Image 1 (spheres, rainbow, N blue to C red):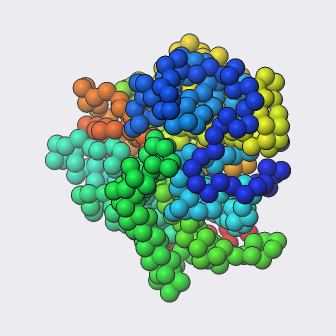
Image 2: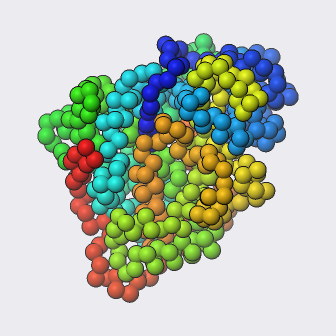
Image 3: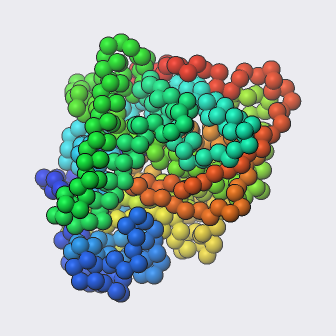
Length: 514
């Protein structure tokens, strides 16, 4: 989801508008940090690298080189960190702040200074955060719950039809439809009609295009990008234009009184003034925030659900334990209440363990607010930055044990969580700019896993081997599951139908938290 914000801090300065700053600027003793052994002049560390999987390539280098290492590409050096002690030091908000670089900065042409992509010194992110944060409090979440159920009913209806036809389900595709409809409905009162389409909604296609293009920009020298990516650049311009048109139409309809959200996120963007300054979001910033929420609000959650369903299908003993919890907590009712979702503690552990192994936002960058020593050892000048590889941090054997690659939800048993050092589990980023929609995503994902476990047995394709596609976020590629419908529980027939809320349900939380 989009990220929250904090005060700008002492690193305020005019950011570089294009390209990415070389990490060696500000790392006085860069030579002390290991690097890959076979470096090609001018091109850098490209031997064995795949431009389609830069994060997974970096994981491989991390295993070889240790908890801090560097890679060079086209004359620019980048520092990567995954050791728990180093990552914990970078989490110190007094000395480090979010760094907007690499693929994140490449998204600024479409979303500018929205919550996720704003530089620390830009004022609009603080304004947007203060206006929008109440939209994720408990009262607001309770208002979203019936709409989440309504979208889940569309998913299960679709899966029932696939099951009746003897077809396996397209997990990443269907989770993308689910999460797009959920954030669109709850946040903006809009229905994309995703489950009525045989192909992805054009908004999803445009979104995937912009994310993929942003990552691809990292794989070519910045001066040559206009020439090497000419065709891709034209396609990206068309994708950005489609995103803008979609959101402009949505906002125009809301201003005209068509499809009012009764206090949803879009109403907040359009109607709510800052509680202290009275300032409102500009029309341009509203567009940027809506695109950010629609993209980030569904892309990461769909990946988290897809990885969780993959692991559940491969670990029937875990699925059985999680299903038993759902049956015990929800009883015979088909329609769980908001508080019943929070009581699915083992299901939540399944989700957390999936996010540990495959955090769908696989890295985050931190920059020094002042001249400092990272972990008391590596000098960093003000503005120097490093990329924390979340997937490797989550696999650090010093924290997670020699079996860190093994899927085990009991790693998130309360006792195990208390025994671990802080800052070792970071699927939503860190600090004051960690994900503003974390509770929204966790509630949605836990609810959906509970509903699917209760309704279906999940059967994997025996020949499938997990492949992960990267487009700034991570998603299992080509994941399909076979379903078996579980028998209805006794007494469930008299319960309300799943997702009873109508498809045009509106958010009933106007002013929640104000």
